[in-house]
Each structure stands twice: as structure tokens, then as C-alpha cells.
Image 1 (tube, rainbow, N blue to C red):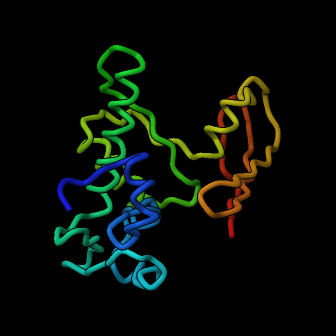
Image 2: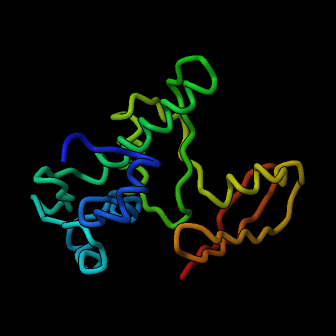
Image 3: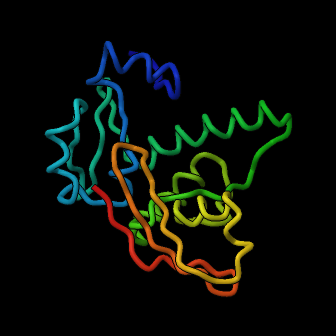
Length: 172
């Protein structure tokens, strides 16, 4: 009913109206309907096929995963602007290491729709390593465990002369 809500309001709504609450949209980004139709039975909201693209039906309207992701990024952008007191126009966005080029381009498109210039797409394990300060090392092998988003992922990174290379990543 009404306009879409994002963030805490949506999280609260999920309990009483799961059928009209979109979550785990990241898993749909940059993938065709055939790629995600198996997941459709596990989601309370409705997925439809439109020209090979998965569309999400909420309250009689349909959205692409890119459009939903843009709504989320707009909310994050607004929160950052409020906290910082200045406009936010540029961003670095993290994605799972297993994201393919199509998924990365969809992420970039969502950023543009949200009013952001996405300067770079960074693998999540690489971002975690940078945040931990492992970029100060000259070289080595790094194991990064990711226990978020309903999966348990492990990535093996190689650091050589300040450059991270994802050697392997897998999750369950």
C-alpha cells in the first residue's frame, strides 16, 4: 500500500507483510529470470518474467532488482548525507567476490539510479582486508571468512606488491 519504504520501516513490515517486503535482492542483480526462478519458490514475494528479466511484484507494481537496489542505495546515501552534513555524489561499492560482470554492471546501474557516481566496485573480501590494514603487508596469502547475509563464505586472496588478487572463493 502506498509508496515503497526502505530500511528499518521495511524490516518492521516484513514481519506482518512478508509477501510485499523485498529482501535478498542482491542475489537477483544482473541475473536473468531463468537463473533465479528456482529461488522464486523460497521467497514470499512474487517474481515474474518480463523479457527474460526477473521482475519483483509488490502491491501491484513491478520492479527490477536494479530499481530495488537503487532504492536501498538512495536510503544509504540520504543517511550518509544527514550524518556528514554534505551532499554525497560518489561511492565505492562492495560486492561478493563471486559476482560476475553482469552482476557488477547491475550494481553500477543501481548506483547511477540512486544518484551516485560509482567510482569502483570492490570485492567484499578485499574490502575487509583493506579495512583490517592488510594492505600494509608487502605480500602473502590471506583467508577471509564472511559470515553475513545467510551464507558462510571463504575467500583466499593473494597480496603481491599491494595488489589483492582473489584466488578462490566459495560459500554455502
